[in-house]
Length: 196
Picture (cartoon, rainbow, N blue to C red):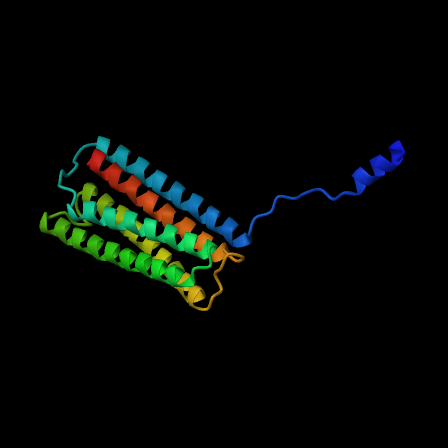
């Protein structure tokens, strides 16, 4: 084969393009925006706390238990993903259902934590320490509700056998977002424990 034929053969090969599923790309943009939001809020918290007039109060003990519940839900979500890869549809549906149930339990525990804060006379309006606590936990709860909605769509798809070894996009998106929410809560809880 002559040198010119080799060059032409190389020139005709199309370049590989980097591609990502559009839904996964949107998810990662959303995750980055949430990270930026909470980074800005934790920075504002530290600046405001340094100014003084800061209410000291106990972090509700139920937040420890809700953290464990959320971590267990991450394990069950990973279990769901593994089941999808093996086309184990019964386990997939069970694991997604468990994740959803633990997510709901987390929200109930957050509400009980807010009741504990009220019992300590920590309110949304008043001292900025309380305001930050409610905003942090409330925004995380809002994002967790969006995660539960995504889980419901994944559960529906699992019952319709649309999630399987050759079509993992939906469970991957669901698992990525759920694990992110778990990591975000662990960060927030640790931050609040350390800087309260």
